[in-house]
Image (tube, rainbow, N blue to C red; front, side, top):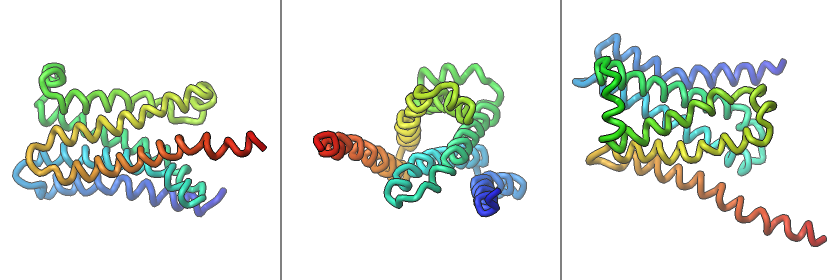
Length: 203
């Protein structure tokens, strides 16, 4: 067993759980401001999106550094993104809607930002369920195709944030810029791949 990786994984778990610990501390100390429900909703949603973007950044980081270690954290980061997305939805259903869960179906139809947010969560579910090595073996090449849904989820998550914010768009636009950069890098590498392989085939 490589104890360095055990220690790094433990540190990654601790860092991923830190935002939740701070939110819980805020609840216990009544320090979340005038609208604690909104603070919990926004806090869990923010971290779901941040971790989703971090997960998308790990493959470009591997390619740019030439190191394989970022990929070893991809599953962990992705599952924590799903965890915070579930917390975000739970806070909305239980605290924001006050238990009137059937109202969410009305909101999904009437409010576009809830429509795209709920769609992003639904798409995350199969990715979380099939994140194990066992499912990778069962699905084979289909596993990689299924997990390309993460790109659509990233777009939906950023749209959810953009449409939710009514005045100051600076923060959601930062996330949109990061997502555009990450998807742009993937597109650039994909377009360059045939050109790089062509000389080898000709030779």
